[in-house]
Length: 360
Image (cartoon, rainbow, N blue to C red; front, top):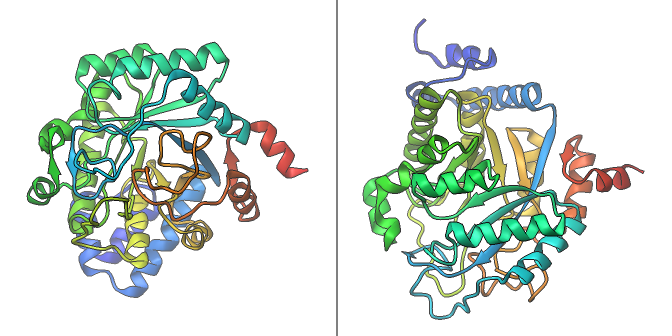
């Protein structure tokens, strides 16, 4: 079959996916009308595979200590304006109970990279506290890259889902923006393979939009997803495409700003190439743009709401963002976002009691 945009659209429509080379060809040669066709196919594939289910989660930041100096991150080690904090078990439980009472049932445990404050021992103490308190969250862990042995410990703790983003697959850019332990490109690149080898069932990968060329990074991400599928039998569970946001005490480094239009192309190509992968939308994006993406149905399956990027940001201090990893763009509470997605025809996956309350 000749390599044409029309043939690629037909191939994607059948749910057979596209290779990274085919995706690159589409990005380079598709017309505006053909992109509209890609958007329609992305919507059909998402509806067919995910049946309008939308998984909600909340990030629970437990430490802002970090050994890295990433030019774009508020937690960078050299940020003297940041008041750093690691949550005690009691403080962590206070934050978790707040999110549970709000209706969340999935927590993303996230922190700056630090061998002590975000190591497996710290995570283990929080997991034990949640169990003692009877807070039966589904847990996702996003910390710096760990060893095979440490991912094995997380697996023994009952963690079955980990995230780690390469930020950019362009080595020169990666080296330019990272200092500290994170500067080791290959150690980070192979982290999710170590997690899967250790028994972790699901991993999520992604790129930080604004660092490198989105076209280059997206194709490399797709390449990596196919590598994971070949070695472990299935694609990563999710792709994430956070766009860079300002952070207190940090000069915003952004070589390649990504427009709203290009963001939608990224979602569509991701759905066409890897039809089984979940796509994540966070509160880095504005309420209007999040609403638009959900209305268009381009592939979003996971969404955060009512978020804070500050350790203790839900109950211990205001949500000003001064001590957060970055500034949020959507500050709406969970209930408001859930009401909106219900009106858009989605089925929120979260607290069953809250869903019943909303539908009354």
